[in-house]
Length: 128
Image (cartoon, rainbow, N blue to C red; front, side, top):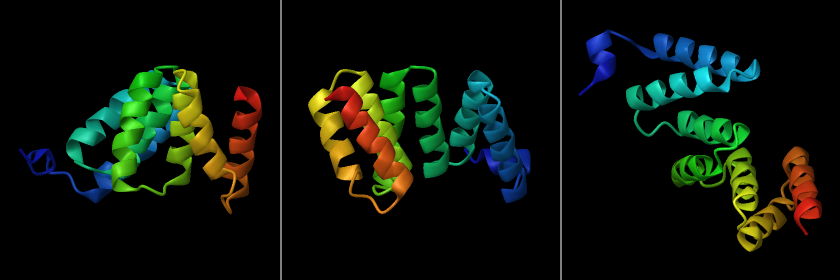
């Protein structure tokens, strides 16, 4: 079923909804943002941004198993997305998968993205 066609929506409406969801996330209203991103995930199948955001938001509210599931799905679409990889390392560590989480964090310390590298180093220090 093509919900976009049924609703008569185009890219503009989807982008408006993404902006709204992101705004709620920025305000710390994660439950509302999650609901909107879940709706977006239905409207836009296999959109890595929506799935990445669901993973990040579930991580924020400490639903680490859900976060890890969403992040694994997102990384199938964009396997080198650094923020998702960092969030996956966090989720793994929060869930007690220390070896796998530290291994991923160690790989991320080599990133040219200084924010990702430094956050990964901080994770390693915190969990070593």
